[in-house]
Length: 293
Image 1 (cartoon, rainbow, N blue to C red):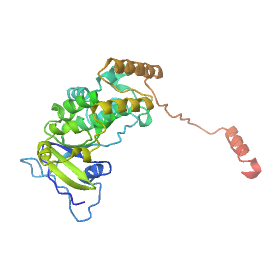
Image 2: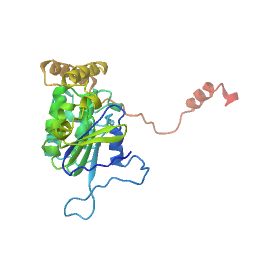
Image 3: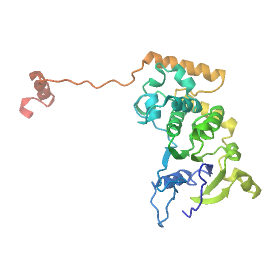
Image 4: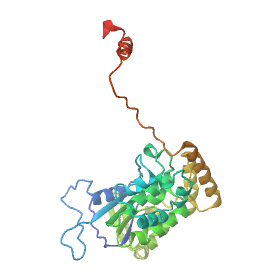
């Protein structure tokens, strides 16, 4: 409520605030998924030289989701396959090591609800899906770095969120990682559903804004790394890290997937033809006999 702010085209804006401050709701409002109570709206002007607004929006939700399809299919999500663009996105989203250990690479089938993936892997696939479209003009990223450790988070921020694959697009990033804020063009701080402060990180520091009091800074780079490793263990899965320990773990996970094979979901059996008489007998017996049918 009472939210009034502007975001420059092509900029990177961080949205921060304590738990329950309205960060995810802010993105939902931009998407038009929240009903306006006072007739206000989000205005997205068309690009220079265009009469109509044809801006496409990519949204990466806080709870990453996948569908029962191949890894490549989850990234493309119905869009045409462009090898050069696809390879750039996979590298930027730190998925190369995962593809190396999967039994069929990016053609490996992902199980229902991503049961054969870790939380970090699902988060990176969801981010890659949002990054793949070159026509996207607005990217709404709801805390995609919370599911990965410090090393992978730095890679994603450097190569995906601020990298070449997202250049030109306006990016709105919800995050609790304060150490990324100096590298953002603008910071929007929310408190109890309202915009409390807005400006560059340096401007907010000059005003004496207390980030420690408004943001959950308990998840620093070191704490995030330790905490995310624990989360990955609970999921009985593995997060790709740029360390010897995580590489070994990733290889072990890949071996498990190889033993399971490429096909993870059985096709439904389909029988055609007339129904045998014995089936009616079984049905009658199950219902208590012919007298009850």
